[in-house]
Length: 155
Image 1 (cartoon, rainbow, N blue to C red):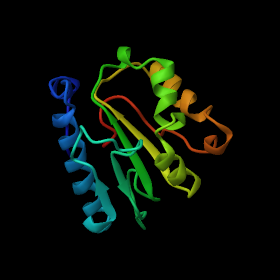
Image 2 (spheres, rainbow, N blue to C red):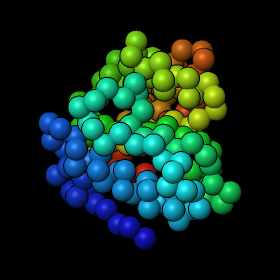
Image 3 (cartoon, rainbow, N blue to C red):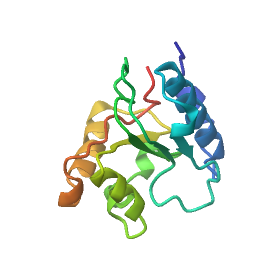
Image 4 (cartoon, rainbow, N blue to C red):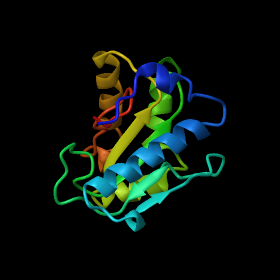
C-alpha cells in the first residue's frame, strides 16, 4: 500500500501544478493496472498549461473488481494543486459549470463519475462542503458526485 502524508503533498503545490499532476497521473496508472484496466483506457493531459476543458485525466472504462471504489465505472479526474483555503465556492462550481467546461459536462451526462484531487488535507466539514457544491450544480449534473477530496484519494 502506498502511504503518502500531507507533508509529502504540500511540497508538490507550485505555480505550474506539474509535480502534483505527474504524481496523481502515475498513481492512477498504477491503480488501474492493479484492477485490470488497460493503460490505453487512461487519457491524461500532462501539459498543465494546456486547456483541458475540466478533465485532467479520463478513464474510459470501469473495472470489474475495484477494491477502492474509484475505478468501477468510467471516470473523469480534475486535479487542483492548491491549498483548500484557496478554493472558494465559485472556483469549485466553475470546475463543472464554467463556460469552458463543456467536455467534462458531456462525460458526466454519459455516466462518468467525477473525481477531484486536491493537494491538501482538511477537515471532513470542508470536504463535505466541496462535495455539496458540486452536487448542487446545474440540473444536468446533479446526479454526479465528487466522491472524495483532500489528501490523495488512494487508500
